Length: 197
Image 1 (spheres, rainbow, N blue to C red):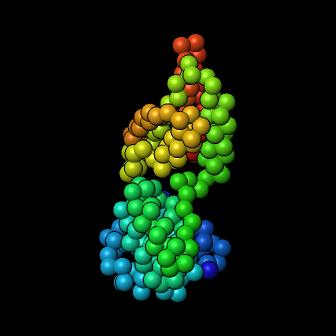
Image 2 (image 1 turned 60 degrees about the vertical axis):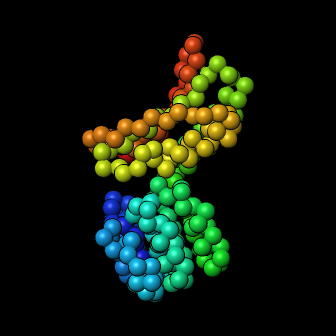
């Protein structure tokens, strides 16, 4: 398989290493300096790729989707912070009958955590004394706050609880990605936590 990568941070470095070890090819790596360039130039560089994987910055996703559509290359988006462009990206993909897969977090553990939180939120629907909250912390290099995972958790909680869910964010040092969902009452507090390694 021939891959093109948008961004070359921790995630795409890991993807590149795993892909090469499995016998796949990396045909182009778009760094932050060239990934937001002319859409047609990006599309030309994408030709020949079987898929493009985007772990760059949220502000580039719209132009990356346009370029992938022009080149006929499916796009996988794992970066966060592009929610404001989500409708426009979907429109581009649907108009051209292209392909897009995206997720706030591709971790198996986080996706299980989403389901646990959804179940907890359903259980808490009738417990009005319990105030829901969400805390997330990451290393100082993490660019977006709140994280895409935190925003997804907030959506999950809102769907069942139909009220605002406050989110607090910390960016410091080398903290591994940590998400904590809580329900606080005058009598006690219930918390659920996921921490990346």
